[in-house]
Amino acid sequence: MGVRRDAREAAVQYLYQRDIHGGADQPLGEFYAMRGLSPSGRRFCDELLEGWTKHNAEIDDAIRRTAQNFEFHRLSTVDRNILRIACHEILHRADIPAPVAINEAIEIAKKYSTPDSGAFVNGVLDSIRKKHAGDAPASG
Image (cartoon, rainbow, N blue to C red; front, side, top):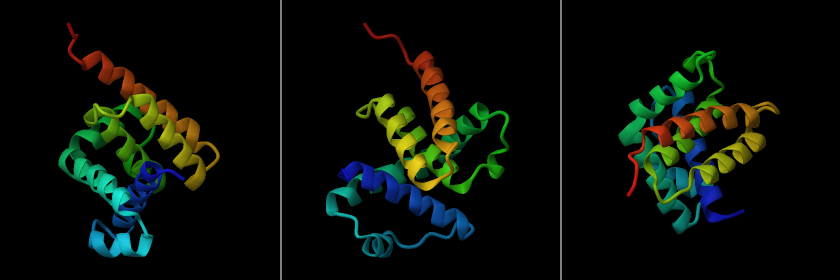
């Protein structure tokens, strides 16, 4: 498995753990030691978690608006956190192409969630990508 995939999975697992424990954060050092994440994986995971922390209201709002037929708090905890990390990448990481973020999220959903989660994650993230592309200023 690649370093970035491992870091994305770790970020999802950290946010999942945080949700399960009512928002209580385990110190990242302890989490990384338990998880066995490489130093480069830790750096990327830190970036993802810091990005979600900085933009969590915007990210969660984008997911809420896009997954209109699903109540946000009723989304699977795994799916919700996969969406959070990928949505951060789509909205705030110009260095990561949106299709890469979406594909990574789909693969993580297939690994950790239900058989239908890959398609659900794809649909939500692709809609966010299209809306974000429409909001982006024209270049040139």
